Length: 83
Image (cartoon, rainbow, N blue to C red):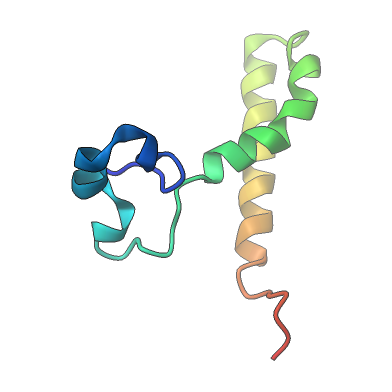
């Protein structure tokens, strides 16, 4: 198990030493904060989802999650740094 990079320091030195993402092989470039970014993306539709049935709410969340992932994947090669 690991803790997200921006939250781990609130857990103390013992957690930093045992659960720091940089110590996990193949994951040093990740920060595991994507879920929080996604919640900021999904918040605008939360009021509409209150009125939906459970099935419609799940479908809406799935649709937005797929769109979010698609935008991330298609943007992997883009950079704001000119070469």
